[in-house]
Amino acid sequence: MKRFLFIFILFSFTGIFKSQYNEELYKKAFSYVYENPDNALVLVQKMLKKEDNIDNKIKLYQLLSRVYMSKRDFDKSLDCVLKMKELSKSISNPEQKIKILNSIALQYQNMGLYSKTMESLDEYYKLCQTLPDGKFKTLYLGLNSAVRGLVYKNQDNNELALEKFFTALDYIKKVGNYENSIANSSVILYNVGYSYFYLKKYNEAEKYFRQSAEVAKAVHAESLEAFAYKGLSENFTVLGKHQEAIELLKKSVNLSKKVGDLVLSEGIYKGFSDNYLALQDWNNYEVYNKLYIETKFAREQSELASLNKSIDVLNQENNKKIEEQKGRMRIISSVIIAISAAVFIWFLLNFIKHKRRNKLLIEKLNQINKITN
Image (cartoon, rainbow, N blue to C red; front, top):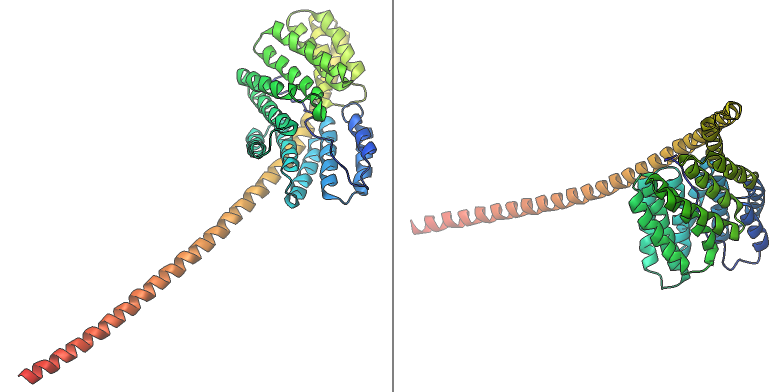
């Protein structure tokens, strides 16, 4: 339960698109991300094949990364993030860079690489400070706090997580529904609910799970609504309200049929299993416990594959840094050797010069002595 990772819808799909860019198709793909990710996958891949503009490619890879994260395929999601990172080297727009760094931070957070998450967050927080005040800056300062809250929650520092989540909500309330911020607030409220749940403040947890579900329902984000009901059902399970918990889980199942989210499915199956066990309904317990174990295994295998790839990527980055350090050290060493050689030659020339002068002085002194004698 404490390892639960939740995906933010923290990316932008607005902006002025070039003439070859199919905005309507993009928005259609976007609408499928958390409801029918397979449809979104087909549309985005189709668009990528025809796209040459770097800015648009970055947006499409950003969206594709979210599709794969929705499917819990972190391996392919990481590939998309790395392609975005590579493409970002040729752009100078700070807002675009902030969006990319936000995607990178989310990728690392979902993979449990929290130090790398914080590096990306720190980098784009500094970029945010250089921007003029406005909705974009306000929103991404809020998202920065939200992702920090996720890190602290997953590290069991729930008091600090709540502080960051409420800061994020304050920022996001100021921008209305700019860049999908209402759905983002549903995600944050959901995580507030879990933070209170881990602190065993079950009344507060119920309050925020319900708020999360209401907000998600208002913007027709069915997968987010399913997550909220799943969280609320877990809260009811702890309180012994097993039948109510089961009804909420059934709602989650109906809402998430097309999503295919392994973490959501795992949580739902575990919820059914725990509640049927408490009710001593052995037949249903065996069915859902088996589904839970199978889904958990599939999720762990997916995460393990992406973790192995991320380790390879980090090793490549570290090796690159080491080579860069070696290169700098070689340059520094060459400069030191050159300076040392120059100083040595200077001293040697001065020594020879002084020796010759002393020799001449001695010869003159001997001549003077001969004359006086």
